[in-house]
Length: 508
Image (cartoon, rainbow, N blue to C red):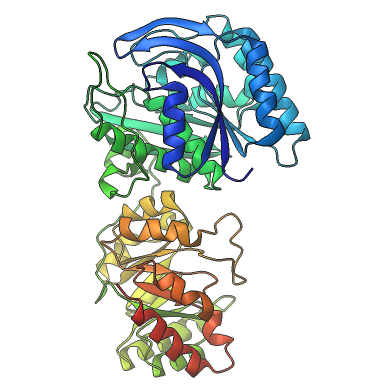
C-alpha cells in the first residue's frame, strides 16, 4: 500500500476538476492514484449541465475491487451526490479503519459548489455528512462557501474561521483546513487556515488574479492527501499544497470559452510560489487581529556569515571537544551544553568565545542567547520554540549571527520570516542525541529544502556519520553538522579530516 491514494469523487468531463484533477495532482507528488467514481458530470468550461449520480452498487464494486488488491494509505473523498452515497462510503471507511492492518487517513473535500457557482450536491446531504462521515474524517478541506454551508457560520473574520473549524471538529473531524480562495480578507489577499491538535496555522499571499481557477479545491485536497501518504506532517502538506496551487494559477490557461483549469505542474521549487507563514506581530497578523505578546520583539535580517558554505560544522558538548575541533581546522562549531549551573554556563561560554577568536572560527552558542550577547559571541543557534521567548531585537542589535533549526517545510518558511544568518534542516536521519519522533526529513526532503533556501547558508544535521556524509553533501547543502561522528570516533583527527575532505569534494 506504499504511496497508494484513492480518490472517491465525481468525474469532470471538462477535465479540470474532480477525478481528473485529483489524479494529475497526485501524480505531481509521486503517488499512485486509484479512483472510485461517484458521479458522471456533464460539464465544460462554461458550467455544469448535468450530474449523473453513480449507483451505490457500482460504487461498492469499485471499492471492493480496490480493497482486494490496492489498499490505500490515504483516501481522498470529493463529491458525494446523495445521502445513499454518503452512507455507503461511511460504512466502507468505518470497515477500513477497524479491519485494515494500517487504517487509512481520510481527507474529505466537501465539494458542494463549483467554481462556476453551480450547486453540485443535493441539499439533504449536509446532515448525513455531519452524522455519518465527519466522525471518520482525519482532515476536512472546505472552501469558505462550503464551510458556511456546513456550519452556518458566516466567515467575517479570523474568529469566525476558528469558530467554524471548532464546529467541524466537534462533529468528528480530527483536523480542518479552510481554503481561503473565496475569502477576500484582508482585501487583495488569500488567507488559508489549518488547525490540528490545538495548533493553528495561517498562510497568506497576495491574491493571484487570474480568470482560470477551475479545480483549485480538488487539486489542493489531493496534494494534501499525496503528501500525507508520503508521511509529511499536515502543516507541511498544507503549505506545499498552497504553493502548488499558487504555481498552478500562475500557469493556468483557457481551453474552452469559459473558466480554464488550474495548471497541474510539479513539486513547487520556486520560493516565490510559497505563501507566508502568518505570525503575531507581522503585517498580515495585525490585519487579522492576532494577539501580540506584551514582550514581543520581532527582528529580521540578522548579520551574515562570512560564507554561504560553512563546511564541516562540529556540534560539541564541552570546551575540550570544542578546542579539539578548532585545532583540527574546523571553522564552524556550536557549543551545546545542558544541565549546567548559571556560573558554569557563564564560564563555559566565555571560554568558547575566546577559543573562537583564537582560532578565527565561527563559534555558535546553542540556546543561551543572553550569555552569548554578554560575552560577544559570534552567533547563537535557536530552535523554533525559542523564537517566542528569545529577545531577537537584542540579538540583532548586538551583531550576533542567528542560526535557526527547522523541521520541515512549514518551519522552514516560518524561519524565513526572520531572515536568519543560516538555516539548519533536520533531522536528516534518526539520532540518539534528542527525540526527533516524527521529524525525520531524509535526503528527498533535503534536496527540496536546499534550492528553496539558496539565499542562506544551509546546514544538514541529525544522525549524519562518516558513511552518510557524502550522500548528504551531494544534495548541495552548504554545511554538514556532525555530533557523534567526531566525539565517538576511534580516531577523531582522522574522522575530522575525512569528513572535511568528503564535504569539500561534494561542495557545489
